Amino acid sequence: MRSLLFVPGDSEKKLENGVSSGADALIVDLEDSVAADRKPAARDIARAFLQSAKRGAQKLLVRVNALDTGLTDDDLDAIVPGRPDAIMLPKAAGGVSVTHLHAKLDAREALAGLPDSEIAIVALATETAASLFTTGTYAGSSSRLAALTWGAEDLSAELGAEANRDESGRFLDPYRLARALCLAGAAAAGVPAIDTVYVDFRNDAGLRRECEEARRDGFTAKMAIHPAQVAVINEVFTPSPDAIAHARSIVAAFEAQPGAGVVGIGGKMYDRPHLMRANILLGRVKS
Ligand code: COA
Ligand code: MG
Image 1 (cartoon, rainbow, N blue to C red):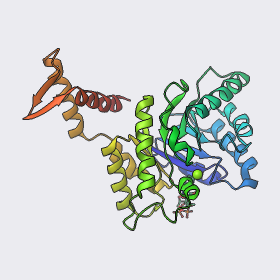
Image 2 (cartoon, rainbow, N blue to C red):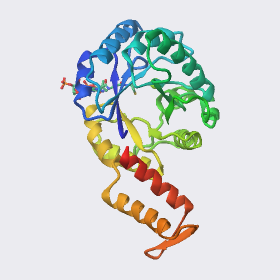
Image 3 (tube, helix red, strand yellow):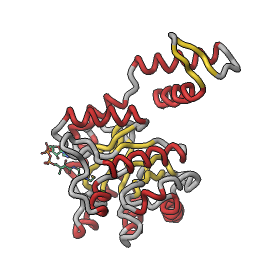
């Protein structure tokens, strides 16, 4: 999965546009992009969309409201029967939040007659100040945990910040910390890390730079807020032929010297961490 496009759950039009956007996944949103008085309508529209959508390569996620809002149960009651591929949990406060959501899903899958643990969980791990201190607690929280991602908008509101990016569009220190904690938390939990949204949706050059920096640092996907962002994200997060060839050469060099801890290729040293990185990249090419 390279691109995940947010679509407000109360907009049938945008849901329809999302299907043809080329995004690897849609995140049908019941949370921040839906006004309080539209939540019931959004649940109905989201469920109908899930039930009528032709299920193919495009994954369908639903972002529910946070566990402390009192809205999560109604969200899940409405949408679990529509068999979403995953639930995105906003304002997650570490592994305990994921375990909590896991239990809620267990009950509803049983009631809806769905296979156990079919629905995955993607957690938004850095949206509150307190959650920054729990990003290392996701390992073992749930077999459903499929990825971690991070958010800067709610966090900047909670920190009382005037801005979260500098004049050149780069994230400021508190958000770079959140981003790094998401990356480390995901790696520690053995799941992929998904980069946050780029809100300046008419700025393709800025989006491309942010995608490239995310890929460089270890993110394997990025969320989008507008269909126009999908092509750039897909392009940057598709491993290039050069990167694939290089990874294959590392794997081949280690296979040619079983038992070797370190090999030389083209005058450079490669050891076990390089082999691990190469295998991760090749795993993404297969999936
Ligand atoms: N998903 C699907 N379709 C979308 C879309 C999205 N996220 N954002 C825009 N579109 C569609 C519009 O429906 C429109 O379709 P049309 O040409 O068939 O009428 C087309 O793309 C062009 O839209 P545009 O005029 O460029 O954007 P806008 O000003 O109408 O909308 C936003 C701007 C930001 C409100 C909109 O992109 C959006 O709702 N994004 C998602 C917000 C969200 O979910 N946020 C929560 C997570 S941070
Ligand atoms: Mg939010």
